[in-house]
Amino acid sequence: MVRRTNRRRIASGRKVRNTRSRTTTPRRTPNTHRTFRFKPWTPFEVKTLRQIFRDTPTKDVAKKLGRSISSVQGKAGYLGLRKSATYLKKMHNSWQ
Image (tube, rainbow, N blue to C red; front, side, top):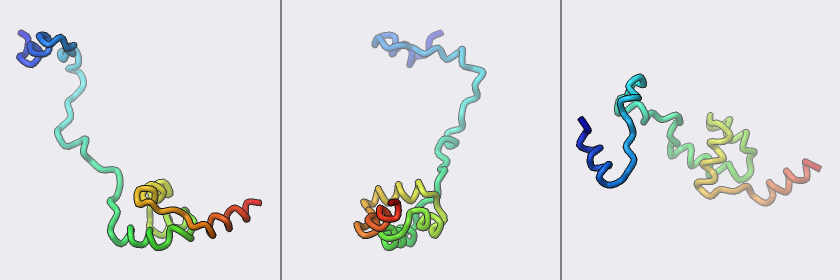
């Protein structure tokens, strides 16, 4: 017996996936795919990031906030924060 939804797909010309051959894989419960892997940013952390990001190395900002470097870079980019010109000049001079 063909399921009703498959009949509609067949009539419309869409491909039908064979669901019977996939019975060995367990189905997920509805909310298992919605677990978050990151800690939400608090208003205090955002405020601190805005204040110290321009003139402080990102590594130090991440350590102070207890976050990874990539999360600090991502949030700063999302907020439109950039390093100051004096900080960049100082870092450039220290490389040479």
